[in-house]
Image (cartoon, rainbow, N blue to C red; front, side, top):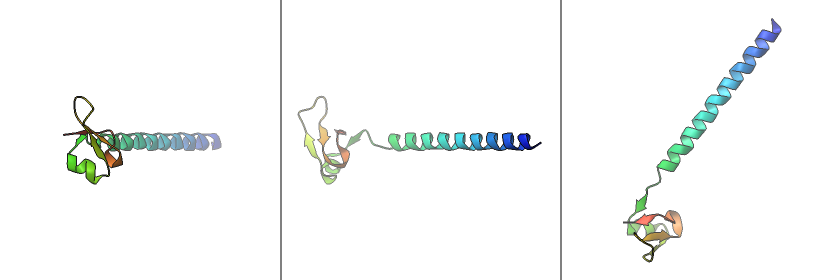
Length: 72
């Protein structure tokens, strides 16, 4: 009888831990997708970056909060 209670507690803990990991993975995927693919020139410079027009096909924001994002 005692073994059944222990096994039930182990399974319940494992199930809750699995849900926690799934929630963390979903939250991090949502945070990554919230980053815009491109920024305006004003957003680039306001974020502390400079516009690098030597990159093809679109200019790129260098430095600051939007480093590496394309500039529209």
